[in-house]
Image (tube, rainbow, N blue to C red; front, side):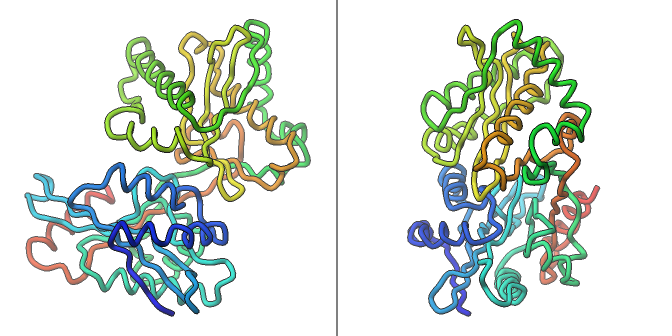
Length: 361
C-alpha cells in the first residue's frame, strides 16, 4: 500500500477522475464527493487553510481517500495562539473516509490512514458527522484511543423506499401523513397546486435564494423567530450559487399553484441512490397550509410511484425536528471525534484541553 498526501490544488484536480470513480464504489455520500469538496474549497479557503487529502493506492489504483484539510485558527478565544486542526470540510450532514467496497483489509487501510494523519503536525483532530455504521465509524469505535473521544452528535432521520411495498402500505404505518393528506386537500381546493421538479440553473438559484430570504423575514418580523438563518447570505452565497447553477446532482422539488405562484420548495442532492434533503422554504402567503409537510408528502408519493427509486433512501438531513418523525421511524445518529494531540506541550496543551472540555459541555 502506498500513501500519498494531496496538499496542492493542482494535485487535487489531477485526481478528480479517480476520486469520482472511488465515490461510486464506496459508502460515500454527496458531502464527500469531489464536486462538493472542491466547490467548498474554492469558496471558503483562507490563507490559513491547507489541503490534507490522504490517498491510499494499491497496484497504482486509488483504494481509499480521506478528504481532510488542515486549518489554523488564531483569535481571542485561543488567547491569540495558533491552533491547528485536522478536519473535514464543513457544511455536510455526513462525512466519511472513502474506502473501495471491493478492497481487502478495510480495517488495515483505515489504520494506515489514521496513522498518517496522527503522525503529522496538528493540535486537534476534529472530525464531525460520522456515520458509525460505515467502515470509518466502525474503525473508530474499535480503536481504544479514538473511541474515547467519539461522541454522539446529530440524529438524521431517513426512509428506505424498499422497506415498504408501496405508498399505501407506507401510509398505514404512520398517522401524521394521513393528517397531512387532509391539509393537502384544502390547499388543492384553494390553489389547484401541483409538484414540479427543477434541475440546477440560474432560475433555480434565484427561486431558492429569494424564497428562503422571504421566509426568514416573515419568521423574524411576524413570528419573532430571530435565529432562522439563510444559507444564501454572505460567503454561503458563493458556495451555493456554484452548486445550484451547475451541479448535475441538484434536484429541487417545488409546489406550484395553478396561478404560477411558488408555494414551497425542497432542494436536494441526489447521489449514490440517496436523496439528501438539505434546504426547504415556503412562501409566507401559504404559511397556514403547512406547505412544508405537504411537499414532503408529495415527494414521498412521487418516489414510491417511480420504479427507478425503489432502492433509494430519502435522507431528511441532520436534526431531530418533530416534523421529520411525522414521516419516518428510522434514523441514524452520527458522531463527532474531538481529540487533542498527545504531543501538545505547554500553553498550547492547556488551551486545547480547555477547548475539548468546552466542546463536551
